[in-house]
Length: 460
Image (tube, rainbow, N blue to C red):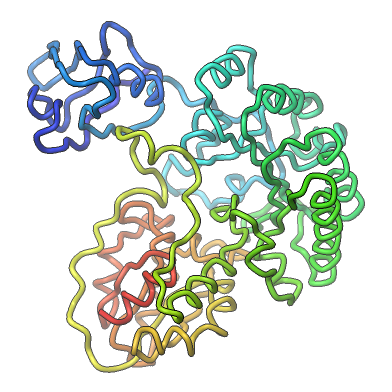
């Protein structure tokens, strides 16, 4: 158990008035030591609080009076105060096993914690789920949750998770659905393992056994050059097309039976198969947008809306952390200090992006140029750090970006970089944004990974 640290205080909030300071450690609220930010938030919603803190000069208790439900006015350093429930699966396709050595220690942490699923949309396999967890989820209505299914055949799922509990842990999925907990599922497709006929059976059994699922995302595995599993490989275009046909069949069947599509394939599968992504209505509410499903279509629709003179709005962010004032942003949700934008200079604007981002942006460049009033050039950055099929912008690293900007001869006026490549102010390879900016011959502007963000960054 580690005490969370106060990292931000809202001016004139009850916490500020009471004398809480950045750097103070939270010990208890009304005599209760909370195990996570969810429990903490429930405790501080009360009107009268005795908050025990540890400061540089020792421990003390602050008494605070406020209205019921009024935010205390602090943000904490972590969401889980006790031990994060780590993953005891050994999935052959797990990307953590495909990371190079020497990266930040936190990147090697595998979690299988339903609380992080609720807060941030992390997927859990439920292999470490318990009766106590079920009772808490149901009692506190901790949903939606995000569950990795991969296969419904117990033999296949056990083999994929390399955990005997993989054969039985989907019973918790049934129990959660029976208690009206909203669940989004995921299938990571591994060619020759759980695609093809196995995917066909999985979709059929999901529709029969788990029809209450809010959505099921079907995504291809990510494979880096550090992969050591001989039987793992990426989709061929033909395999991607066949799996898309399977998804389309069961999507139509779900719509016929349930009145909704349920199954949704990732943008990457369409790009690999050389197919256009579906129309906007095919994604319904974009429930798994942050899982790479519907990003291309949502971006395109935002561009079209802006062309018609309407403000674009993207899908809602996954997870409930935004609804809890004290929960910190983590990973790519972490606050970024992008710095002040320099004055616009004459010349084209370079868009730094990955392989898949370049393919998605290319047909939209004429529209984006009209909307921004600037000439735009796509600068595709090959991911040499991870290699394999890691072509998404969220896995871009500083070293690859630095190589590109140092050798780029396009004479652009500025570079635009999507914020999903950053966690706070650092890339996955621990390069800092400031290091990259120092290496670049022109300013680098970090923008939201939306059409509006790109246009604003180009036009500034």
